[in-house]
Amino acid sequence: MPATNVTPPRDRTMAGSKRRGVASTRGRFLRLHDMVASTGLSESTIRRRVRDGDLPKPIALTTRCVGWWERDFEAWADKHRASGTDD
Image (cartoon, rainbow, N blue to C red; front, side, top):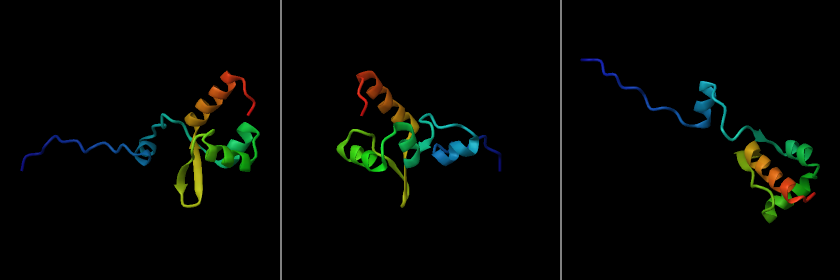
């Protein structure tokens, strides 16, 4: 049987990127304590602003753990810096 020169399909998942040592284009995940430290807002205020649509929605990482893409948070922070609002 002749050998074929077929390459396997590339794994395009986050896990596949990590195995190849390639960083995500969206950065890393920020956990709730990172959001508190970065914004100076309390946990309850962050949750309320997510509910009201003022902050990006977090991504479920596990059944009990959520995180925000760093790039999404930076875009939100840049928008609020540009508008000159403190909240």
